[in-house]
Image (cartoon, rainbow, N blue to C red; front, side, top):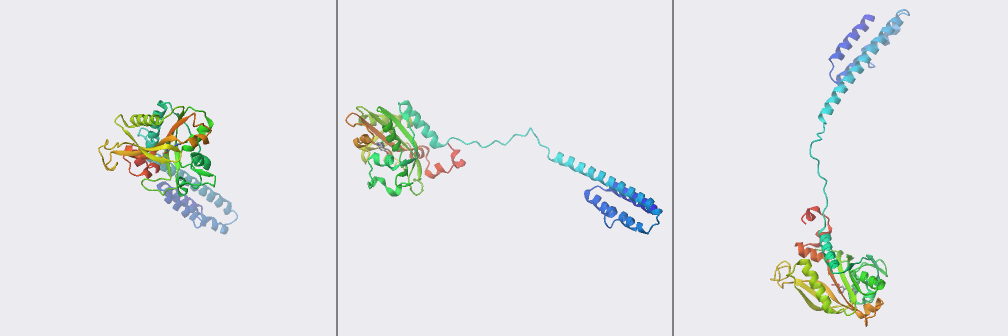
Length: 339
Ligand code: 2NL
């Protein structure tokens, strides 16, 4: 029996030394040490041995077992090391390779144009005022001479939070708040987002940018309004820009006008953008209505003023040749990368 054990050991060692994969090592382990393995079979058969033989054979059997186990462990470790070395070699990182650049955003055409507008007005002595986008009905309508029931309220166009609170439909409430809080002379613009519950299409967005301006002082006339807007548009789009005023009506100005500028696509010759007229309608304006001044605690006998308002989006679209307002609000880098 002892000879059998030594033969088993010899065979096992030889096979282990020739094994070159984890799978083969496992096969060998099962063959010798498994439940139905050769060594296990011998150990089971020990019951048939005499009392004297049993401890001697048992000792040899245990020695054989631990020698096989040791060699098996050693071999497994060896194969693991080879595999690890191979993996490290495959996964080597070349630190001299160029990195991938992170995608950096860029300035939005609305923001770039707004900055230019602000800069020009600041150079002309205007302050920039801001106010809430969620506004009282009083500041958005009532104080501007637009009482409840007035057609200019366009109830269907306004986002109501409740009976008294709306999303501002223009930035005029900022001018009202400024007139309430400051004494004339006042010279300000109020740029910002405004809201109308329009259905989204190529020319309408429920959210858009508006810029309003207000000048209040003694002896302010319509000539100051014309001169200010004319200078602004020349600085904005070039000295060739001309301006033209047509009578209009707004409840908060009297008299009121709409102002057109030279078409900046065709320079006034007439094209499809200006529908052949050579002019583009851009601004609403007028002399501040005496009732609006009174609503803000300013005496219309002592002071007068002009106000104007225009949409930034339309200006950006005409300037860059953008034909769909939705592009300005989709944050699509393929579009924004072009400016
Ligand atoms: C437009 C152009 C306009 C004003 C806004 C204004 C503000 C105050 C008093 C008087 Cl506090 N006017 N703003 C004036 C004329 C036109 O906006 O097309 N609006 C519908």
